[in-house]
Image 1 (tube, protein in one colour):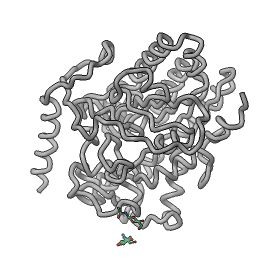
Image 2 (tube, helix red, strand yellow):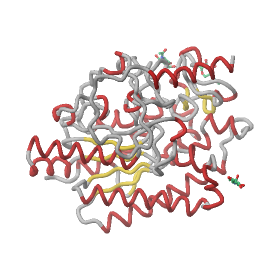
Image 3 (cartoon, helix red, strand yellow):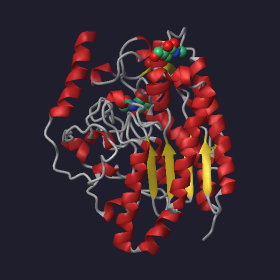
Image 4 (cartoon, helix red, strand yellow):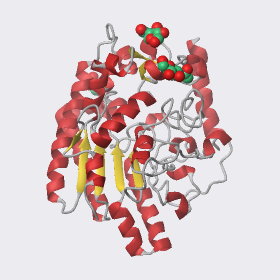
Length: 400
Ligand SMILES: *[C@@H]1O[C@H](CO)[C@@H](O)[C@H](O)[C@H]1NC(C)=O
Ligand SMILES: *[C@@H]1O[C@H](CO)[C@@H](O)[C@H](O)[C@H]1NC(C)=O
Ligand SMILES: *[C@@H]1O[C@H](CO)[C@@H](O)[C@H](O)[C@H]1NC(C)=O
């Protein structure tokens, strides 16, 4: 059983490396920072078509929504890359609006889908999944790539990804395109009024610190590692600010100490969360919240909020019955104890109905959890998660 699965993993990886390159032309400097370039596969037809967006809930509150991050918000970037971290086959996406895989690491929607609708916008397309026309990007773009971390090499053992700095580079390319097409004044106006969502950092633990890559645990105590990560994010936020981004949502890190993978790896008894891992994440969030608050005072006219997804997630785990979740430690899809050993790669590995599960696969929550977290970001519906204000207060209260 297990060797077969490992074999199929390897096969997926190899086939994604050697399949035909697709027709889509990458922007020239897309891979200017990457140290290895592998021709990538063409996505299957089901993933190359962007889903018909459901009708937004309100008239647009902001012109556009831009997303930078990792698999927590990737909506199709990695379909175009040679990597093990791809969610372009079932059972991924089986509960999505189209009931098809899209590249989202979830059974359904990820938080930014729910938030786009709240902002009165359609689902925003992944940067690599659209045609590169300004009309496709005018409501926003999602640059997030599964496996990406704040540190450049985090996650590189999985294969290709678009790193944090590359994603920001891609955003500046988009901005340039806007300027060329609508003029500098309008483009800047659009960027200044749009919301920017950052959700990155967990892979610096999963694929770097906790794996003790390059002896990092000896070189950095958790506190200094956290300071390194947080100050890198702050630096990039300042860069974004310098190119007129003003409204930003910075997401904290999720309690991966409760994720099925670590419950399996650390041999949790009765599904108890791995406190040593959660402590790292909590400390990062604490630091990040503090630094974002300081930054908000430093940068005039900025609207930067920090949303502590750890708090929201722990509320769901603790009060799971109130939310209708009765499976709290097992993933819906995967193999091994807690279904946390082997990653989800086929429909046979999945439970029948994910809606009573907190975890979809070994690292990612279900769409049901994402909906609750998005509500918290929007208006703190279930738990106050965002500081100093919720997203709704940021975009609705300020009359232009
Ligand atoms: C991390 O790796 C180094 C060697 O690469 C080793 O000496 C050290 O003990 C490891 N640290 C931990 C905490 O496992
Ligand atoms: C969760 O509830 C469903 C039905 O609501 C039931 O079929 C399932 O056995 C329950 N699972 C656990 C672990 O309690
Ligand atoms: C899963 O279960 C929920 C409630 O238990 C139900 O509303 C939903 O329709 C089910 N979904 C599927 C795909 O069967």
